[in-house]
Length: 110
Image (tube, rainbow, N blue to C red; front, side, top):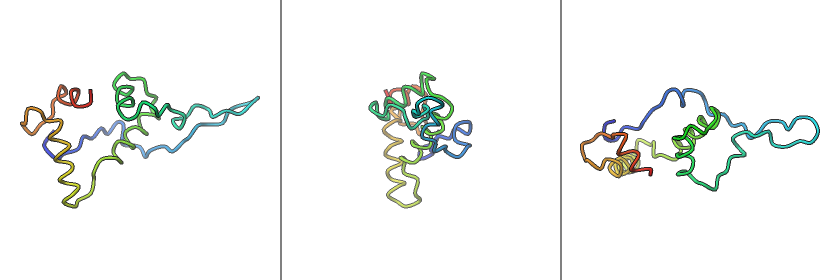
């Protein structure tokens, strides 16, 4: 990945994010239904990254995860957004070669 480029995963980002916050509870007592809105948010982004890496997310959770992650990254075309993207990239690019290896990404989020 070249400096300033953002990762893209068409498999996980191609669908519009689902905004489901739990389904119906079924007969006999309600309940939330277990949608992504019921996830444990106490682990924060690092916990969500770990859960994703360990393949412990449902497909719906993956879509929500990528949508949330994408929304939190600077995506504007203004100078401040570009500067912030470059700064974030350099934090991961420990070899300084303008590309990110899986090892660098793992080290950066671990």
